[in-house]
Amino acid sequence: MMSQPLAERLRPKTLDEYIGQKHLVGQGAVLRRMIDSGRVPSFILWGPPGVGKTTLAQIVAHKLEAPFYILSAINSGVKEVRDVIEKAKSNRFFDSVSPILFIDEIHRFSKSQQDSLLNAVETGVVTLIGATTENPSFEVIRPLLSRCQVYVLKPLDKEDLLELLHRALTEDILLKEKHITLKETDALLRYSGGDARKLLNILELVIAAEEGKDIEITDAKVIERLQENPAAYDKGGEMHYDIISAFIKSIRGSDPDAAIYWLARMVAGGEDPKFIARRLCISAAEDIGLANPNALLLANACFDVVQKIGWPEGRIPLAETTVYLACSPKSNSAYKAINDALSLVERTGNVPVPLHLRNAPTKLMAELDYGKDYKYAHDFEGHFVKQDYLPQELANVRIWRSQENPAEKRLAEQMQRLWGKRFE
Image (cartoon, rainbow, N blue to C red; front, side, top):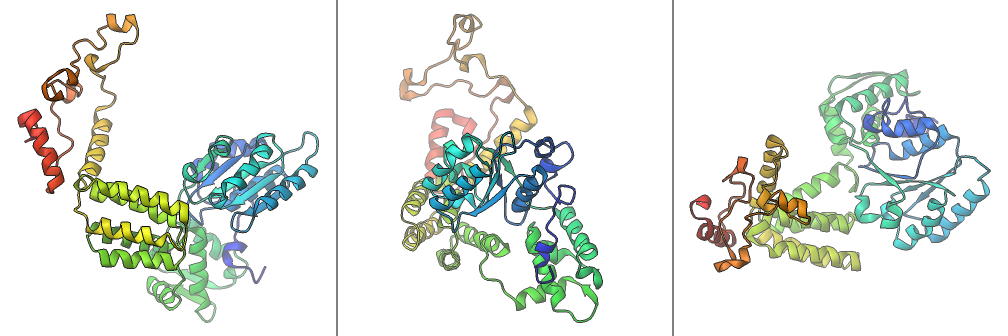
């Protein structure tokens, strides 16, 4: 125990010791109720690193007194999956709880590896608990996803992290022997980024640099210690989020040199190419948008190509797309429009759809004037006719507003020609 890292020494063994995720495991929460009932279906835990996915799976197995098998998607193939399933079959007794198979980083499993799980999950040979930092909708095959519940885990909030710090200082077998004062916690909380494991690792790093039993922790000490011990690129840690932030902001700021530099930092650090490609798609829609709609086409093509070719060649389409997006004219008018529209919906609620815009597939609907007086645009000159498309309560509300770039100027001129003063 003495040689274990602090994060491992403090790993919770029961739900009452578990910190965070109250929406799932708090009193009366959905996952808590299932665990307490002793019957748990297969599920996938989706959330950032260090929020308790592995710990929660271990707690479930302990609570259910079920055999527990762990596979890592990084170093397990189809053979390892089948071997574990055979072991699970031999450990399954009549009317006993299904063995639990925990697969860490399940998003890294190939289609064939995921296929090999299907029958065992479907027939109850194992209860699958998967953990992923990536959206399961993109990374888990549909047949397997349909057999699993998906639960979203959130980064730990400030109160959770402070509770964890208090527990570390008062309950850890080594730290409670020292006199440790948390004079300041801002740096600890900031650099942990909601990651419990990272918080404890930083705390342990700072304490290890201090001599004697009386230790005072300040923001300055935390920052100094981290600067003296720069971590390698951590795909789940602070640097991961800082670098992707710098990357996107460089594209938004039209600086191709900076953008390609931050891309190189991610490539050199072994970042998941699909993660970068997804961010490029988001940037193309959010930051370039209608100023250059081709940007989204190129970003989407890049995403497709990167999935096909992987590393190291994937760096080339990523670089091409990065430079193109950085050099493109920028507009966030569509991004602002959907946000403004959502705010409008929140303020006004479920305003009824005007009758003339409703379909009338039945006789009764037609009798109720569904679709009455609707004007089919293609029947009119220029394929346009003025009529109300918004609810009467929101008549003439402006949501989308063009921005200053050649592409949107053309769109604005078209709207002014059709609608007149409404789009001036």
